[in-house]
Length: 503
Image (cartoon, rainbow, N blue to C red; front, side, top):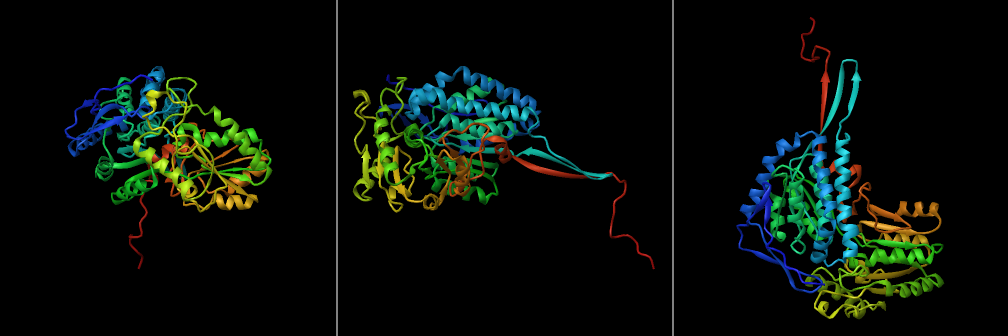
């Protein structure tokens, strides 16, 4: 994998790249090699104010642009995204450490799909209101109106996809946006902004700034901002939501999870193993919906499951990220590497979990030039207990915990025994039973006999501490509009209780 160094990353507002007035520079680091990728200029308060002002100035015109015109512009952006898919996927690979085999088939495609979905939705009347006839001479009509200037704050695991998942419904609904990417994965922002501009998006409709949490905090508390959409960890999300609440801002929170995957004894071993591997090792385990608590029937089924799982671990291939055979990359940063390794060490030394596979070493298959990167082995612990820290806390890395159970009701009760509720799933041949289990699981995103797919048509969001609101699907755009109801009386006279009385 060759070394790349990108130009200095500036800000973008009012339809063009803008130089930061801040003296703070953040260095973006390659996860695969630990070499620098780019210098990123953080935004000052002056810069943030300018970006928000740009968005505020653009809002009146954009919000009154007919939905079909907005749709055509966004569909042009979709076309550009897809025509540059490989280029953008390679950038995501450099930035996140994901294999090109993944970014080229998932990250760009699923972002473009959501933009296309919302462009078509609003172009086809998806924002139309309702009309209610009250009586012959009175009726009510409703309008779905844009909110105003919105802030999107993205996470580092799916940079371009998340930027599109937030900006697509936002812009389609007639809002304008100031977006802040994670300081760990900032390279997509400039490219996305330029694509929107090339598609015909007016200046100020989509803007972005760079910076750490302090930049996000200033954005969230800004009085001009009408809504904040945040993706990230629970502790940060609580702070963002609290800050937004002070200004009565609309919020959407997509936060973390510690999701259960329940395998029922009649499930095909091969399917259950494939599902568990996808739920733990795809994207090197850096997926908020990962099913890291794998509940397996105790006894012979568990033995067979673990045997097949170990056989298939050879197909997890770490290596040159541009090699199409590679399907497992490094962790995103040194900070996150230290966190994940710390959890693995805790699982071995303190939790006392049985290490079935992996551990503290780096994968043997990575080339010499990648040894300095943030690589960790996919790791499996078995015979885990619910009280263990590796079972209770979100690790956000390739660490599977296997939890034996004796009865299905017990497994469901234990699966729900968490303050988080992002995702859950079940594997079984009995679809009637699957629906009954899903109905009892306390999570906003659920799967039956699969794991992880999240198409544009599917509204997704967490329960409990895993989030507020949903993204994607028809329900998703409701978070970006406000309702206005109007009652029209055509009787020609106004009733009143303040008329003259007789006598």
